[in-house]
Image 1 (cartoon, rainbow over the protein chains, first blue to last red):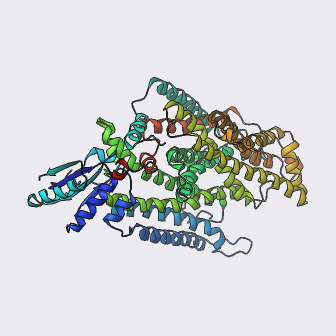
Image 2 (image 1 turned 120 degrees about the horizontal axis):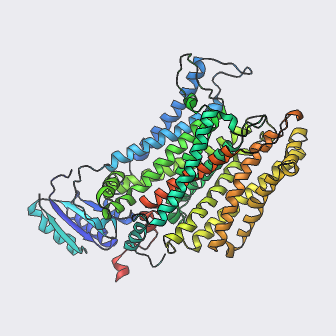
Image 3 (image 1 turned 180 degrees about the horizontal axis):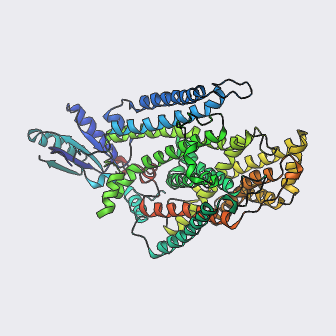
Length: 171
Length: 439
């Protein structure tokens, strides 16, 4: 399933050209564009947006909830059918630490996965941006969604900053 | 790796997942035959009962538990390489981590079978899972065996998720070069990944946290496995050094298995540019380091048995080395302590045939280490009249061989259908294409 799209797709050979193009687009007042790269690149990421991903907070909350659930499971089941052994406490924390730890990692890991999928928009069923198979190989891409009237100026900006190929996509 | 480009990396790694050759088919068929024999042995055991295994009181844990600990241990190097070395930004990791991670998942899948095989009445395996039954009885959370259920299932889940998440950008590369059913499958597995800035940002953040969560798992899972033994009062098992001793042993055996798998892979798929002397040198150093730790653990065990003054401990350890099954102990010492010492020399660490041979010895030695710990300790327990020797039966050996075939079946499918090297991460350590550099 792909959405109707209108805009400009530029293909770049060099990562620093992408950084320049991103800066130029931002200087021109454009905030809505997508950069596609075969590898993560810190310079490009910093040029686009230096905010932190919120995934880590979900992971943290998931880990805390997991650890608490682990303790609750052990404590509740032990109290549900008390078996006193050697006069030790029914809710004995040291052996329960192992279950708590495993549940911390398990729920924290799964929350991390689902938060990543949610924020990264995966699986990407809408495909709002134009795409070129070379972006998985050795080329970098910038997709700028814009109307017909802006496409020429956007294309010119991208070309001026080193795009080796620029395509205008009409809806 | 200096002469590699982004495009060449795609080309070389995707070459590995071309349609299978007849040599691959023959190898896969041979593997299935061994697996079939293992399944027959298991079916025979299910039909006739656990008596067909060589269990004799007091040796009621033997080959199956040895296999379990061996396979869980193999898995550990994969997580060490993918998670711990990722956090330390060890660059040699990028070429080997995908194979090591795949190895982890398949090894833990193999390990997980053995507690079930060992149960005898395998159809009651679900009794290990905490659920309320008709008598409102719950599992015992104070038992190390219950800890193990949680540890191994968490380990399998997290390492599988870590493996699949790592594959996403690389499967997207494969998707762009595939046709037909493969393309559909890769599209599904890649979640339609396109490498957008938004995707990379959240992906990288999540990947770091996966590594951070998986790192303590490396240390915890084998510690929990070691407590299956150490929490008992059996001489030879009841020791506080078991957790670090088992963790070091697990990493040692896992690294050896990575080398065993990577050497033929390098040759068959012509990956010389990706797996050079540098990689084997680094793995050789880890192998040597962990070998020294396990050697120290063997020595400390012996020392404590003597210095502790407990006659039962002393007797068990004397029997380990000089008893009727002492040959197993000396195989262990030869393979795990003496042969890996060759890695002190850089020329050995950078010699790929030498590393391959050493890794095979370590695999054998580490299987025997678990055999020595489990079987020899039990066979020489407290009361003298219960002492008994143990020998595995053909059913146990068949199931053990079948477990290797089960592991290699998944591995063979993996190298043929998924990118067995991390395309995106290899590109990360290459020179980024820059216009100033091109100029």
